[in-house]
View 1 (cartoon, rainbow, N blue to C red):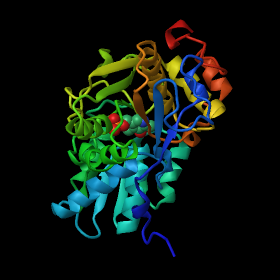
View 2 (cartoon, helix red, strand yellow):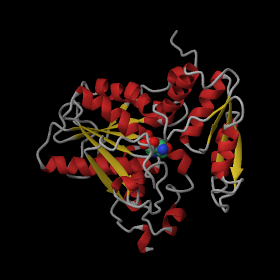
View 3 (cartoon, rainbow, N blue to C red):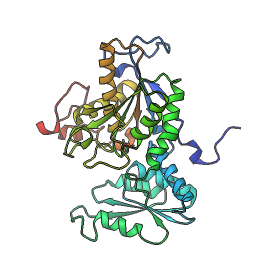
View 4 (tube, rainbow, N blue to C red):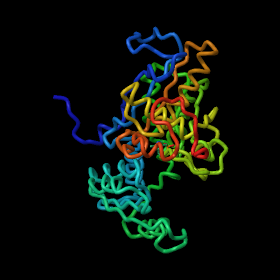
Amino acid sequence: MKYASSLLDLIGHTPLLRLSTSLGPEIQVDPDTPQGQETGPVVLAKVEYLNPGGSVKDRIATRMIEAAEAEGLLKPGGTIVEPTSGNTGVGLAMVAQRKGYSCIFVCPDKVSEDKRNVLKAYGAEVVVCPTAVAPEHPDSYYNVSDRLASEPGAWKPDQYSNPHNPRSHYETTGPEIWEQTDGKITHFVAGVGTGGTITGVGRYLKERNPDIQVIGADPAGSVYSGGTGRPYLVEGVGEDFWPETYDRDIADRIIEVSDADSFAFTRRLAREEALLVGGSSGMAAFAAKQLATELAAEGRTDAVIVVLLPDSGRGYLTKVFNDEWLAQYGFATGGAGDRRTVGEV
Ligand code: PMP
């Protein structure tokens, strides 16, 4: 019999899927083309929604918790406190359940009830803070999470400064990609949020082969692509500050992607590749497609581009996959041809 004894053993080892029709006519690959017989650059998607908690963040959750146990920061029966309502929360809640820890997530009141309910489903507690108060107010998101994290037995992973965030990718995601491509990868593309993914994977791959190009995909307006933190709608990527977990020297290039292109391409991945993924995946895949088009024009038929797709589209059914929501911002609901941005609405 072959089975896992713990859900945690199912984290990682996600597959690579060759993209085909969504790449456009210049570099389109017929899905039936045998491996190695493609005529242009190959784009391979690392499908992270197949992790048990549904996202790439399961990897950092396990690694951060194991390291805290080893360092004596998290003791049996302890409480994990993190200000998050997203994928990191789900990963932490899942690992905490398996290891017998309590979890408290602090999130602003604008976070949807669905997201809060996912965390509660794993047995976590969710503390909701008002968005309308100043950061120094005792009820603010920041103050409440700091107060809870200073209670006895509490530990705050802080994914934006925890070195085990990038390290988990250096130890798992990077080696998996190297092995799955038999060392033939030439370009790695990932969206940048905390920067943990690009930093950890990029470091590992460049150690194996310094010629591998590491490319960050970033929402227009975010600091990584030279913005000021101006608002954008894609979730999970882009920042208005520089986190410690991001190595500023790791990316050879940053490709800026508009919300319109990110969302149109997210829809296209579902319709043309049957890949139901989130908006940050669409953003990264759009950047990979742009890169592939450039490399095809240069005659780089050897190029093997790996793009990481962080999470599933299930969490965005009322947003990216909702025509009214998209139309409200002036975005197209069909193909990727529409180039309107939020500012033009
Ligand atoms: N996409 C989504 C949906 C995410 O939740 C995150 C994590 N914030 C990322 C992309 C970016 O990954 P990282 O934090 O490793 O840069």
